[in-house]
Image (cartoon, rainbow, N blue to C red):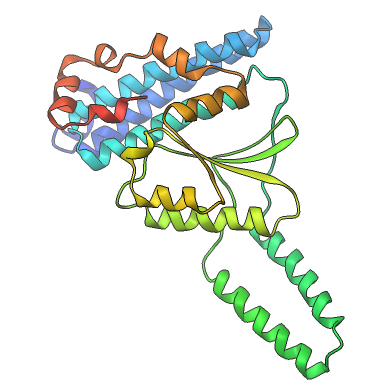
Length: 283
């Protein structure tokens, strides 16, 4: 920490925070690589490798939060964003090292491929209709205009996790919580799920797993839940779903290994408490 502040200057908060995060990330990745090497050498099963990996990730998260706060005090926006950045990898790691043996990743479709296939199908359908050439051309023109509106912005069908479990393809998005600035993300999620549910020929289960309890989120989450496009789980139900799909009881592991008030130093806990930010660490 002293070296970083000496390099950038104690008043250059953003530079110091960035350098600190990079240093912690580099050390974390080095330790994780050692775990992978040892687990492969000694043939550890995933239910042994995963807890060791998660504990290393948690220690790095503690160092990141303490270090960032020591050079640049957290406010509401920066801390809520950071919690989401740290919580999601903990969840996805359960699927990278799953105790279940029928878990596998798949490559999601590209929107351009979906558009091309559907366009060809509709063009073939219209051309086969008992209409004049002029009428067919008019229908095709209107159809292409609709696509221009839909595809006016880049559409990315990727989610946080694309995994097959028990032969079912899941599209999973993790979210720490839904606040007042989530309208754009809500619209993106609605569009993505609409493509998977209504256009893609394969069966997909679109699932939204939220860290916070449902009543602490706003109407954007309710819109997603009521859309019929996303299977929304919040709080305890999120961990139940992770356990069911990955085979790992993340909730129990967290209860036994994570105590943020005890793990963080007193200065950080005092600041987070004063700013009413500790609720974001209710994992």
